[in-house]
Length: 224
Ligand SMILES: C[S@@+](CC[C@H](N)C(=O)[O-])C[C@H]1O[C@@H](n2cnc3c(N)ncnc32)[C@H](O)[C@@H]1O
Image (cartoon, rainbow, N blue to C red; front, side):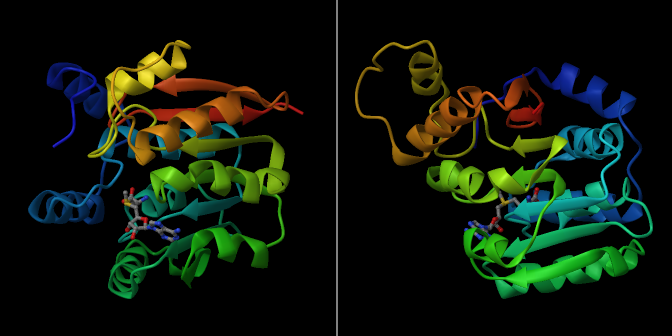
């Protein structure tokens, strides 16, 4: 159970005003609820679709795709010759992703890669217009460094769990972001998200903002 970062009334408002879901997304939401699987959720899903549209995305790369929830939202914004690369360490999740994407009519846009996303990215040339970082929290910075040169100028890097997640301690994370010393030990996941945020905020080629929906996404726009 993670901390709610916005009240449910605000989250519902965001869901109502965001892009509409479809039957496949509704089914994926039901599956996530039944299994307690940590998708980005519909409020963030809607933003992923919007962000892809805002940058006229043609190519998307995901670090950590699960059963295809975030990829499905991205795919809805891509042109017919677009591409979304799904990566996943769990074969069963990737098989489910393939089924969901096919049901949405997006199979032709999708590449499915089993294994460590941080190794998979080496096999792809850029540029990518949108990158989603949603793998192990203590490897976010490594993921960013592995893809940085492949992010198109004008493209965006989105990191999920920028504020919370099962192991993320929001109080410790905010204390670190404020430049103070947290009380007690900071776990590796919280430290990992902090180090990612510091890396991307300190990178002169990127401008970063946070959207406090779902578990919080950090959106970093490549300006140079
Ligand atoms: C939090 S889930 C979210 C998945 C998806 N982005 C969504 O919104 O539903 C993260 C997924 O990333 C996978 N994962 C974690 N580390 C990975 C890595 N290094 N390479 C590929 N997949 C990874 C996990 O198995 C898990 O299914």
